[in-house]
Image 1: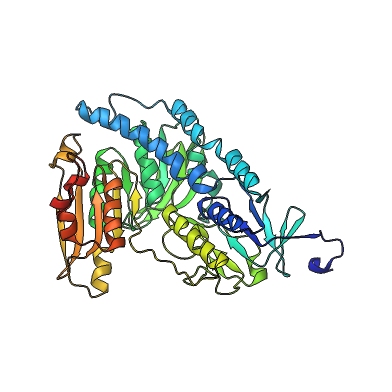
Image 2 (image 1 turned 45 degrees about the vertical axis):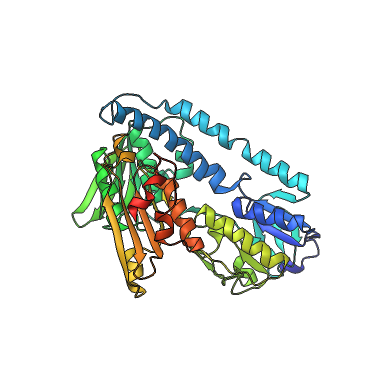
Length: 458
């Protein structure tokens, strides 16, 4: 019998909106629509709070903070990176947990206080458009999908031996030898933390370039910095299989130099993430999606079913970043409540890599500007001898700023070095509000700060 017409199916519970995902985007949409008087339900198959608060940005930055502290102390004392102060890893993880362990309960309490129906469980859509969640059947004229992301499946023998970034952030003990599979954000950030914590670290990168979201010239400088720290950065080393070798793990890679083997204690998955949409039954309700997320229009509405919206990592639009999720939530909420035609606008969306030192980017890369036929100049410099870097003995610092010829419009800003993670926000604001280079050059900044370098960078 068709389960959608089975008389024993659970009774439908009607809502104005059902949201899937309790992270930044999902929670914001739920609260905003509830404030508008809507009857809202929200569900999550994992602890309430989402990737950023529980398994990503926030706990990661706690670890980065500890790594920055010991790194600075070593540099100031003129010590090698493996000498001097050490990270107490178990104590650090316990401190990190103080930021994450209370989030699910606080998020659940917040939903209850606002009158939002919060459900824990995995939801699957049925052909009649309802959502079944652990024996309950929810119906609504609108659904917002903000289910976040999960590690990409690599499809290699021994994949079960991989440790996810989620699991790495909860390690009670840091193994002495670690291999990171991948060459993006996750791999580099966690590799820099692990190296500062005393582990022997290697990065196994499938292609010939790392950190493709950033300026390739600055990324190359960061690779050199990573190698100087003792991190082994291996290009053209695609992971083919992982094997148990006694108490250790053996990673077999293939590339231009043939098959190579590394023996380590831990292999961490840093090879990218995909939208967490599999098994949700979106096929049953004519909602097309892929690894990048739901296929949506510029209003974040599904191209296949107008009753469905997506936000954050679940939407195939823009980079999978927390600020993007917040922006998406505002767009979806406006289009739901006001039935407005609000479009996404990711102009001036910055991104930061929290290595040590950090690297940041906003706007166009040089190759993108060339492809668009723009006329521009590049203001660039190695700034390791500038005060902001020299005073803390940081030997890696540089920038590349793209300025449009004639208008002095800031097309892109690419930064590497101390304070880049904060300075990029000023460039983002300038791009978003159309401040030009002369405006920034004439601004007054507190001194000595990283921001006070800005006029000299232009």
